[in-house]
Length: 471
Figure 1: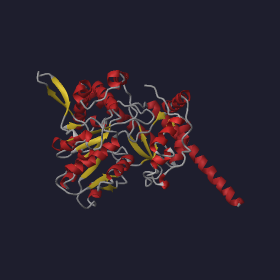
Figure 2: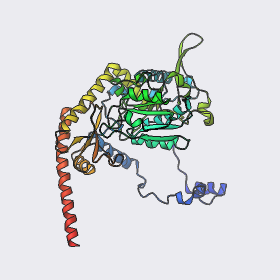
Figure 3: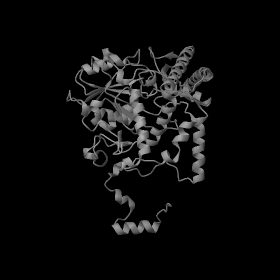
Figure 4: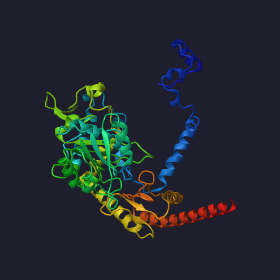
């Protein structure tokens, strides 16, 4: 149906009918000190043509740059077939209704997704996705607190090597539920969480979060960390890159008994960067705690005629309609993105995913070795890594990134705000999309950027000196 905006007369009649002088009065329960009188950063309304042009210009800015930023969102090659199939009307507009069994095609696809994701994580069960990796971690923590019967503790140990955005989201979601978040510092030499550090974390904990690889790209000693956590009667939550799990040891195989829960961001599996989103989160677990798993779970069964069918299972109806009885307030899933990931994993297969992960590893390793040849540039942490690494630059990071941007290179992510203890720290990433030519160009332009940043810094100091003398 067409959109018909309200006229001034419509609005006046409505307000008169309900006995209110102006629309703002409908929000009088909001304290005056919390109200914003104006939004100067929000532009005036644009026409359809103006808006389309603006979005094209912004998209071109992203597409034309050589990207070496990772930090949880990774540029991968996506076969054309993935989104050609995903964009078909049957998938693009499909949604599982409350009479879920009427949508057998959607349910079958979600069942296939869950099967592949559970296999990739080496765990028993997967749900049908969450909003993003950060909210998936928050849900995993809430799930662990409910599921851990060995302790009444509500302490959660989270290493500082977990993505900063994930930690912020976790605090926002679980912070009002009596759950204590304890951040575990990292070893300044390796950029990982060590047993020596953990020994100092006194007290019981409901769960211990292990990132693999961690935010710095470093690989944690997941076996030792998992066994330590289980000895402390804590459940283990693995926050992992799903593509990396095709090459590295899966969470279900960590230590003697495996991680209890695995979660993370599904974007690396066939979802483009798309100028900042969308994303989806995945969540898997062991069978013995499946009753605490939030979100939809699809099962396979047979009807009275013996024909195969798919249904929503292991959930009470309250999960969807009565928040007070639900295990989570998650009310939907990122179905379109899950569709793309299902098709992507089906096309790649286990061997294809492993080849891509290997190509990512070799590209990052090549970048690591070549940047070390630049005078003054150091790799911050020792030990193996995947996808990305932290560099220490001899010049201010933000100035260097500004210089690289002039060459149409997105040079990495500055760590100055999130990890100020890493002086001039720069997080850089290389995936299978980066050729040796791309890496060589990055190295050459980084050298130039460092020189320009050095000259700019010298001129700035000279200007300050002249002004001081003038004063």
